[in-house]
Image 1 (cartoon, helix red, strand yellow):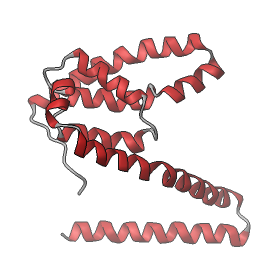
Image 2 (tube, rainbow, N blue to C red; image 1 turned 45 degrees about the vertical axis):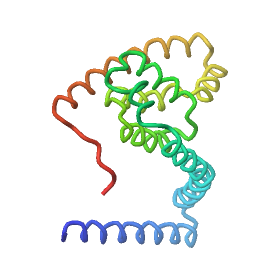
Image 3 (cartoon, helix red, strand yellow; image 1 turned 135 degrees about the vertical axis):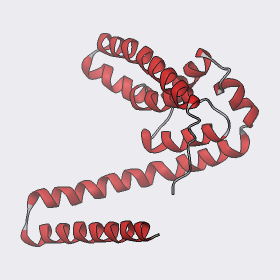
Image 4 (tube, helix red, strand yellow; image 1 turned 120 degrees about the vertical axis):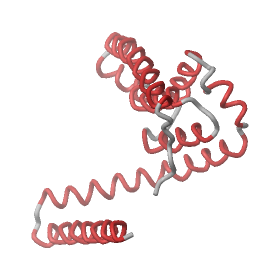
Length: 177
């Protein structure tokens, strides 16, 4: 219990020190500190736009999608089809990993295989449709195709191996503490 209290105090001290640093930066005109404050404001506003609708959709997913459906399509018996489904689901995920982790936890609670969850999380970082279109417009479609054709098999193989390893060790994902 003392450890949790100490961590709580350290977090508060860190937050206060950060706020004092930002205030000092504006007072003295320290440009890197001012940029940090503007970046904090920008990213906080972006998260405030993305997260509430995403969490609303995750809540609806929790209520409307049956556990049997997830077990059938993403469970341990789904095989490669589950991994491909995880990639397709990840491709449509908006908000990047901010949204992918809660969705992954929801999938896990409904019976998805650990390997499929790892595929979903990795694909959320590298296979989102808007990101791929943006990338192709700057680096070319050939680059995007090569990147995806190399990274997707690696994601699937590493997810299968990691999922099997952790399943054998009876690993479970717990809610935040």
